[in-house]
Image (cartoon, rainbow, N blue to C red):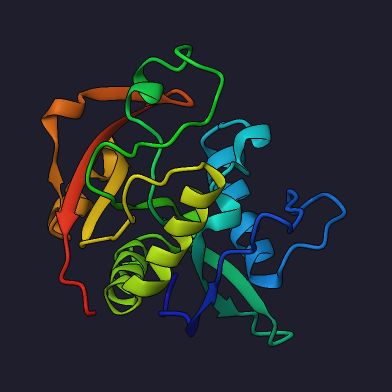
Length: 220
């Protein structure tokens, strides 16, 4: 690209469990920002990386926040989504289900460890890479999370209620997790994340991943 495009960023709050979410190429009533997010995710993860389209919408989408960066089409002035990130509130899936996916067919949550948010589905269209958009999305999501811990706690509490978890309230204290493709591990290290070697390396959709953590200061 010869010049930097004009960019804007939009947030998609959790659509909620009663919202039917569909892939962008199917008839749907997706919220508009979610539709944009899915458009980018499909092009990067499914079309480019060969991941399964059937698995692209998962149980976390209804309860997660997403941010979408868009540019403006010069001929029509309409927004074109080019990058996305998703923030999943606590609780997360137990790590053992990634390394041993046949252990159970349920979708249990990890209540044993400190609650963490997880940054996932970070994707940038190929022609917009090299502009720092992935870094910008991570920083945007973290800055938002630091100022909205109460909303994150409320989202976690809703899952706890549905899961009949009553032992103790879920309160996020600033721990952040990413499951990073090894090719972008260096980028996350530059953003303050450290690789947790105890999690090992595992395969997701044919792509090797590592687990990385960072802690941020939470405003309460």
